[in-house]
Image (cartoon, rainbow, N blue to C red; front, side, top):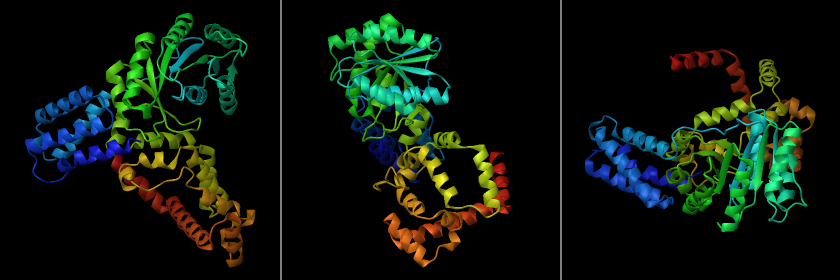
Length: 443
């Protein structure tokens, strides 16, 4: 996520991060490199110039030159300005109506239909809402069918009327259906075009006027850079939407849209899409995104994802097994499944401070655990429960069944044994010592 921008900003701030002499000249040079990095990320020239001017003004105003840690102070100023540029505080979605009506808008190919499903899934699982998806794209072939597939996937009802070519009437009928069937959120998926045109703008404006939604969201492909910002402005002039959704942030995006869009349309980014799966949706936190862009990671989001997958009852059962030395490969497999639910490994590792830079150039597979899972699935129930029974012939059979080598099987067993010992230690004195240390750190 924004790897190129992060790398260039890191290089720009490198001089000031060191222990060399800090002068007004190299501060000015750093500012120049920061501006260049923003322009390479497809940030609007005027916005990039205003940004760096503010950074320079604050840097000189806060006596960066005489600070004991000038590099850290400079990074903080850049981070604060990035946070402000992207919106400052996170903003939620307005769910005040009954039902709350959310109108989705955007160009064709931006991921609008898929994200409508992601948003419905998010509201259902995290806000305990009962959403209804309404199919109002009457032009794109199979658009209605696609929304039904998405709805089936997340177990959310979809309203459509294939014989009707009037999107305004479909939207109104969908809201009436929601009221009659106890749905408290309606998400309306509208038609897009390959480019902004008068017909599309007129149609979306008519739908907006007829249904008076509580929330109008503009969905934009983050990979389109400055074009995304220009399209957002065109839509906002007609709709006066409430917020932006950035999709495909897991792709090779330069970051210009995320950084520029708030300044251009004065509307917050509310959600981001970070993958193909239906749970690959995050609330947009400008401060956390600034941290990630500057290579500081995003530990808060990582912890939140872990907490979402945390099952207290399962944790208690696991604790008892570890205490009795009964932790087996089935339990290990269960832990892997929980980690996989948190998101792609590349995204998770990007949330760890410094990991992005350390892993630069290393290709991390989305399914990084597939080889481990294949080995475990090739074991018998007894072997999973009692790994100590695994002799040479059993290992050879497991390797053949999983398509891996005996060396890889031995490596997994060694890692599993080390992890089991560590977990056992955490149950005893080691765990108590760590808790005491954490307590001191909090104070």
